[in-house]
Length: 272
Ligand code: GLU
Image: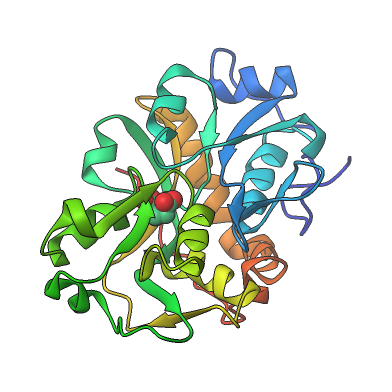
């Protein structure tokens, strides 16, 4: 306790008060927040043996909690796959989602986003040997299978390169299942954001490699229940603050930065 918003630490801010009736006040008084994140993505959100996730998204989530005066122990982490993120925000199963979550016009119809706080790009991973996929255009031949996650932007984007989507696209709820399918030879490639693939390749460099360049832009936002403008403004304020005070850089260095040491520049938040 006793940390201030300007400290480079993720401890809760000691003395914060919020206007009655706001989401900030409700969460602050409860001393608890439910944060949706990924549980299977090294560098961004990966659950450890104790069930607690670690990663860049997890650090960003902890900072938002800290700014609400909520300690890490007050966070309930909820695994939130692409298929269920909007649903979980809509039903209130989670208060926020920090989960490699691309801001898209389609999703903005159901949820709101603070941020962006990071910009990734879609890429492709193949097996290190015996594989002739060199980039998305390889799939135009119609012979190669690719795996992605149900409800994700990469699953949608890749279909424009597929001759026969029904035969070529294999979907699972989580990317680890895609990695298993790739290792087993059931698919020829996995496609999703570069940072997610980088984590898998770093963990299994003998099995997997990245091929081709990034071919989309994926601005990551913090998913929020639709219409809560005060809360969105608050989270945007937090993102702007940590981009300047060193906490953003520290969050990166200790997590995804172990796979990609190039320090990202925090993008300007969009206050729509
Ligand atoms: N950023 C992409 C998306 O939001 C892919 C990563 C993910 O599945 O979370 O769909």
